[in-house]
Structures are given as structure tokens and as C-alpha cells.
Image (cartoon, rainbow, N blue to C red; front, side, top):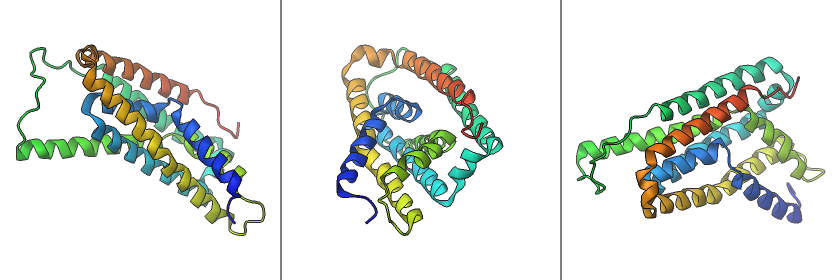
Length: 223
């Protein structure tokens, strides 16, 4: 048995609570859902989930232990991740405001428009992936959190870790979907929010910069 039945319920509940906590991933989902609707929020969630799967695999294979033990490895990935978050924040801060006279109605669907939409969703997906995968604290989190729930006496602890890590990741998808749906609903129904979308870009940009700076000053677990 990989996990005790009563521990499984605790594991699922803890995962939901942890994923309700705002952070770079939640901010990325919400900002995309506000601007582009629920589909963009869902796509962002899938990109983040793929990043989590990579972290789980890395932790199961021992890369997480390496990051926890090596200050140099942690610092390199930390600075890459911080730089990416700062770049995203700066891009949002410097984004051009939409035309004041733009029509709120949807433009006609053309082949070129459909291709641009697919490209946009692909960019949203990749942005979610890189936002998550370049944060070394995620793999450290899995390394610290998941082993607590592996049942004593489990023979293949690597497989148990991998399965529980993937369960945590897929368990987070309903919460991420909830964030996307709520943000898209708010974006559609609050006129002031629609008009202030450019201001939201600025706020999101500042928050991404804040997360990037916070990650930049995070000490290595090996320190």
C-alpha cells in the first residue's frame, strides 16, 4: 500500500488548500483568464500542471535532493527563475494600452484570426509551463511534502513518490480551473474591470516583479 486510506483524504485536502494560496501560478492563471477568458485560464493551468509533472519527476529521480544539497545548483536555477518572473512583470508593465475606441464585440473569425488564437493559447501554455518549471522552490516543496504521506514499509518509495506527486498535480487542476472560471466570470460581468484591464496588467506586472524579487532573495536549503 502506497498511502493509508485516511492519509489519502488528508493528502487531497492539503493539496486543495495549498493550491488555493495565491502565488505566481495562481496569478498567471487569473491574469490570463481575466484578459482572454476561461479557455486561456484553463490552458495556463495545463501548462503549470506540466511544469509540476516535471518537478515531480525530477524530485523522484533525485534532482530535488541535489538542489536541496547544492547551494550552487539551487542558486543557478533560482536566478534563472527570478529573471523569468522579472521579465514577465516588465513585459506587463510596458504593454501598450488597448485602443480607446475599440469595439467590445468579437471580431469575425478568419483563418488568420484562428491561427493567431492558436498561437496565443500556445504562448499562454508555454508561459504557464516556464513560470512553474523555473521555480526551484516547487521541486523542494515536493521533496519535503510528499514523503510524509508514503506509507511505512512501502518497498518502491521512488514509484510511490512519483504516483503521489502526480496525484497532487492532477488534484490541483480543479482548484486551478476554479480560479480560471471565477476570474473569467468577473472579467465578463464587471464593466469597470473590463475598462481597467490595462491597469490590471500593471498590477500583475508589479506582482510578478515582487515574486521574482522574493525568489531572488530566497536562501538555498543547503545554506
